[in-house]
Length: 113
Image 1 (cartoon, rainbow, N blue to C red):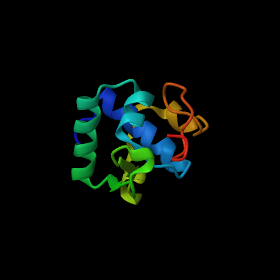
Image 2 (cartoon, rainbow, N blue to C red):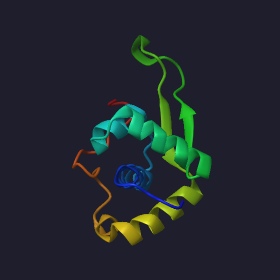
Image 3 (tube, rainbow, N blue to C red):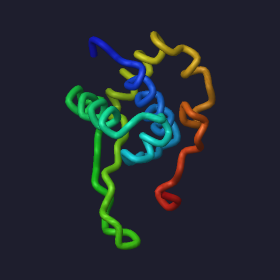
């Protein structure tokens, strides 16, 4: 990936942290954790999907009568690439414990979302 913006770095860091916890995130969670707006998050996710860095899947069923959510996670290649990009651009991000999102928010579980 040629150019990576600050917003994309935030999203990659959030996805990498979720990957290390074996958690998938839906778009609203990513927006909340990064403090970024929807169009910014979804444009970045589309870019990462096109590059093969991110995978997505629909939630099964309709819990609590609400619409299904689409969950995002790093692909195996995406996890490697995200680590490399973050190592170059945000080396401290990889030294932190992978328990919290960039804004300090704890990662939710699917049951708690």
